[in-house]
Length: 468
Image 1 (cartoon, rainbow, N blue to C red):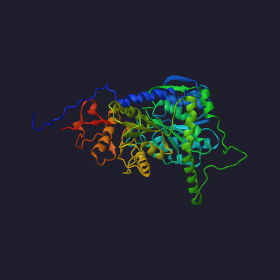
Image 2: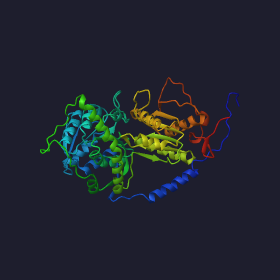
Image 3: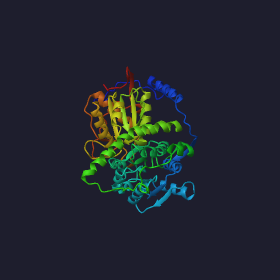
Image 4: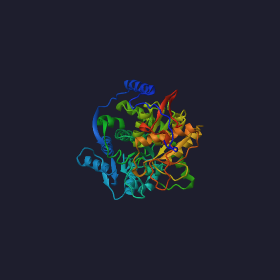
């Protein structure tokens, strides 16, 4: 053996088939939970659909009054499918073809102010072209719905998924809900009007799901019957609307300094009230669909010491990573943020309070120097809650860059090593970044092994082995 070769202590690596007692306990808990799961009163149908097909079906079942739209990839299929339903006489929604996204949101505002249920769909630069109108819709307290198929904002020009479009509009006063799967996107749209039209809320909502990954990929989905959907959504009977001849009103008036701040305060109240309304609507929807939703989803967080917080479709890869590491007895978990506006900061901090370290995953840059949109808001909420564990903000999937199960496991490894070594964490890491000028250093080289996780069982889970 050469003098410069490193001697590595041999270790016993559990096989891929090995199961930890924690994993077995979890499976038993899942079995018990499934026994007690609400089946729902609606008639269900198994199908295979893309995310756009699923949301278009939800639109058809709700049958809103007006849909102005201008096509832009990857949301183009939504107005295409809805207009086909209309031309076939399957719904009586009024479809308005317009010359731009700015005009489509302007028409949504006019229709909603007139007392109609209105929606549109867009992505990326289409949302950016609506920017001015987004603030008007929110400040006028109009309960419209926007199906936002997330796509990178130019530039450089890119048609793939990240969250830069919706995160750019996060402070416009719109509610924002994100979907992991096609079925969740379908459910989110069905619940949307019940939230936006609630008298304690009266704010528009973006129903967001990842472009191509969710919008075009086909998944198994369970839909519910149209009669149950329409009974759940109900009819819209606004108290104030422009076509009410018995109560004349103005929409979008000029508000100078003596009045403007009060409008913002009232919007804030509606946003705050939305938390409870969302939870109430989710509980009612569970009774018909059998599917449970909340402000966020906790995955194997009961005894998690290391957690990833993430949004959208990438939660699926992260769940796979959690399951694999749990097989080895590593106490990891995941939180999928479903509702970003209103931001559930206090609730997230409570769910993370027992962790030793946390990774927050952002699919959009904010260039603030203090983290991405999710990272900066969650870290602030955790600080307010008195939590002082190491928290690292990562950027992933920008411009559609793949985010894999292995990368999710590497993130877990990273935050675990921070605790193990007692080092100050490096912030704002880019997952999967190619950097030809960087010195390539594999700081975990000594831990390489089968599955890139050389481990051995210890008293409270596992311990990554040290090289001698």
